[in-house]
Amino acid sequence: MDRRDEAAADDGGRREAELAEWRRIVQLLAATGAPYDPDADTVVQGSSPKTGAAKKSSSSAARSSSR
Image (cartoon, rainbow, N blue to C red; front, side, top):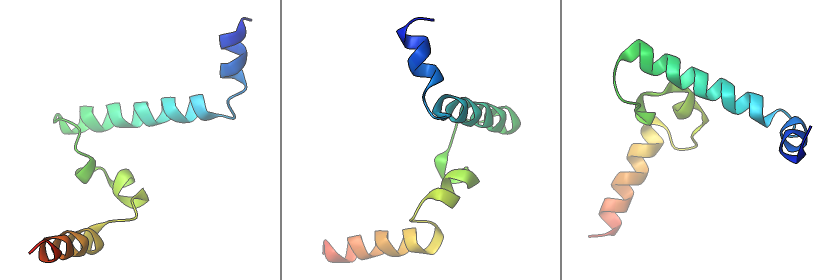
């Protein structure tokens, strides 16, 4: 095993998590047949601190403060 293999083996599971995320995105793209849209990705929306009404509220507050 060379240095790259040792680093990959000792990543705390990060490599497997990244591969699982890519697989999930590929399945999402295959199911929709459309380009990837983070706004339509429920996993991304669920992990984002700004979702739904909070996102709309912050964007409207930004517009009103720029006036």
